[in-house]
Length: 162
Image 1: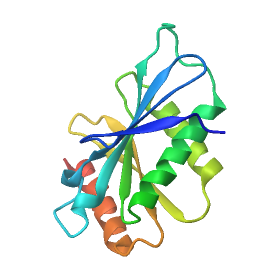
Image 2: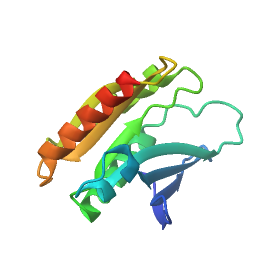
Image 3: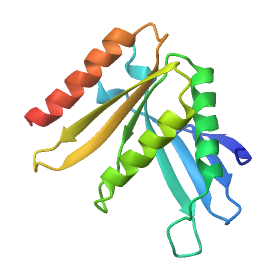
Image 4: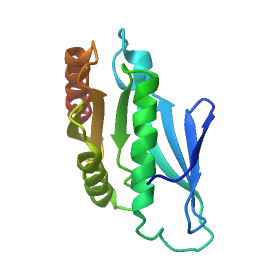
């Protein structure tokens, strides 16, 4: 059962919820049209971001299945609002835990997947050879599906060429 959450809106299409452990999360869908070359679906590209905005415990948040339930519900709501939306999830690597984040994101996706979404995974490599796991999720019925997949592959190839 998901936690109660609110849509705060704003530029980042933010959602907020608080856990029983008094940890507050912000779930963002940041407009990111710059990720793909300009085209008819550029304005539908969003970076999906999960942020802990309040945690007074000083420890990593404990395992809480309601967090994943809530994020899945928010994710569904975001796609119901516009079935043409495209979400990109770039795993934060600032603490070298990007592979752990990718595994957790994959677990959540497959736990809540209802076969209406497609998820593609790639690795972006920057000029310093730093590797960033990245995933893209799009509804199968998106009218731009072929173009979106091609643009995502181009993004990953373009990054690795730098």
